[in-house]
Image 1 (tube, rainbow, N blue to C red):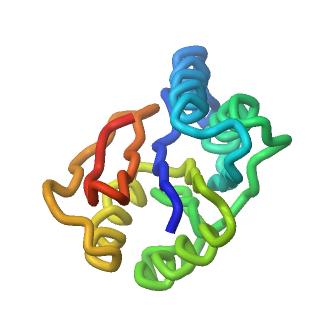
Image 2: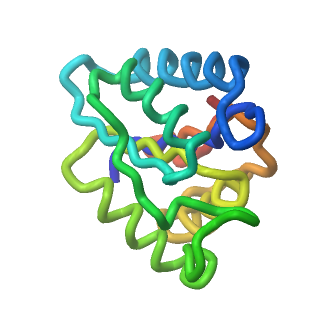
Image 3: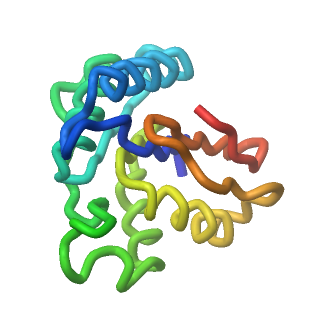
Length: 154
């Protein structure tokens, strides 16, 4: 599996990113760009929610990608889609591993519920030990250092 960044969408007003949320996405994109070799293959997927899509688009601009790929399984929370990832967390882990094939960086821009649950399941599957991350504020993300088998905050 490549490097993985799991990012919670930024601050919002209503259902859209606020100016602060846009700034948070810009900072995450800048950080991710600096973590990669220029020619590294990368892929950005996001929830179809406007707040996640907007943040992912900003991140894509830093990574030289035209647009993020929308993935309904990454939508979560009270306005999430029926029969979403919560029905099959292990299936989402399988999907994350499939999405990561052929890239050096996989970025998922999603919601709190997935950011809080997915790391535990990925850690179990990939043998990532140490302290598993807890809560994540809007605009923050987790970066998996696979060589060191640990999580760090973006």
